[in-house]
Image 1: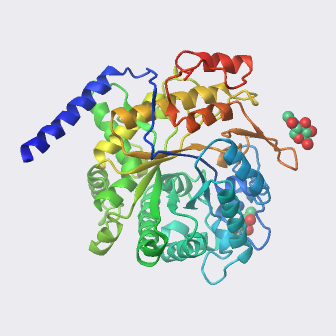
Image 2: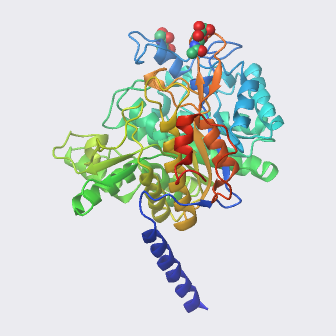
Image 3: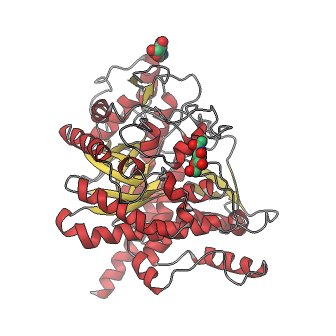
Length: 522
Ligand SMILES: *[C@@H]1O[C@H](CO)[C@@H](O)[C@H](O)[C@H]1NC(C)=O
Ligand SMILES: *[C@@H]1O[C@H](CO)[C@@H](O)[C@H](O)[C@H]1NC(C)=O
């Protein structure tokens, strides 16, 4: 029996290799996702809700950051009113439904539920708002999926040091418990944190996002360390107090682009690619899967800390208790993926800290198409590569793509053909990763339901499938062309081979040209 198992194992690799080789990087394939696959669309509280000081909501770090002078936001804007989803949740549910998805991924504004950040004061109006949203989604046959924390930490907790203070672990656990207790009868999928890398590096390291802390040597590591513990706390609370009764699942969302060796034949660049991926995705995935930081990261930060004359490493360690507590604290992992980068080792050392420790320089190929965001260029094949890297590095964990999306070039309005091309390429590469490579991806959520407050870029970058009129007090939402395309992909569960010519959907001429492209007319 054993020999048969080994033989089958080797055969599966051979088949995977054969299939991979037989499909070119940019080749479009027909095919459908497995029947268990689920489709979704996402937003986050601070980016869409508005109502920043209504009905008992407390101040959070993004309120504070956007209200500071001079404004750290590109267009000087705030999320005070945003898309006014606080009042328009019923309309939002209908928009979600119109896209043809199974689930809606949204986040909870911590300060709306706990104005002071701690469990002592619960704001019933906040509980009511999310109950209304959840019930409205269920009424429209949409599954609610919750991100517990998407960056908007209550200001009173930030005043205690935020994620650099281990006290947050308990507060986050309390917050999660309140959510499970109030919404867990109807909500079965939870993500503890969204993109903790962004919180810790851009918020506490570079300081270009809230809370605006600029300290790159130790603080990003302290922040990551606290967040991993807080994540495990929320996971274990679910395990101990809610799982039996509610039968849901808890995971964490980690962001990562693909980091392609600048010269794929150069060992130095291949190693830089692995380092950069471990400092990005591995920082979070390795502790929850293996109970420790990636070996490459451990070695680099320990050695450099020693060279700097420090008695302890800038990268903290988990003791036995926390190692066991964090290891295995996931039912699935969320991946946010937007773009790819070329990577090579650095020619000079920027000194002690997050960037120097990685010894990697990333940049993009100027021949890759542009979008409305400087950091985002469509590289569809990179999606398949990062999915395979995760599969191979972390024992093929159950994965949900929690974000993937495109920001419009200026003046595109409703005719967002660039977005259609983007989704076509990315979802097709996801299909290859799932049905050819065997990546264990269970679902996919596009970003975003509508244009919204894009953090330090304010309203200058539009990621929505719906165009939002931000000068209109009623914040009218209008579907862009991409809604029709994605609806077709989602309801078809992929790209089935066409049996009839493309004539079932009314498209204007330019969109029809995209749609009727032989690769697209599924
Ligand atoms: C930001 O928060 C700090 C600390 O609570 C407070 O002193 C400051 O006034 C706030 N800034 C703004 C612009 O609200
Ligand atoms: C946006 O709303 C404003 C105010 O209601 C209106 O004047 C303007 O025509 C709208 N723009 C578009 C493109 O619909």
